[in-house]
Length: 150
Image 1 (tube, one colour):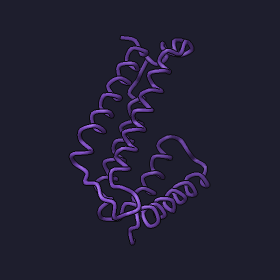
Image 2: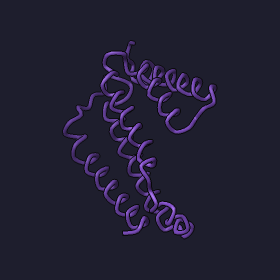
Image 3: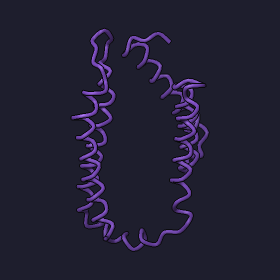
């Protein structure tokens, strides 16, 4: 199976998962309330929508003719190609295990910093400013958008 077929199959599976979660799991598992500014169902539906949009983009990009030129390079994978995804998974597992202890907002900043490092970002301004801005945006979202007191 070539890379284009794998991309198409992955896109279809992701779209099916997004539709299944959005249509069956969210309405049955997340209680809807109007006592706050945004519904608790907003973020799960938003996440499903983003996964669905990503699946559509992956499916469409699998028909790109220029992608066939790079297929031979993608088939030659070494151990080093699995190191970065493995580190990414480890950072996400670490985030899940510590965000209750240290708080969601601080844990997101630390996770972003580590993911930037893993993916090759070395500019100190990017490593510090973007996680700080995302932290402020999350704080504003929780306090203003959701009406929560922190």
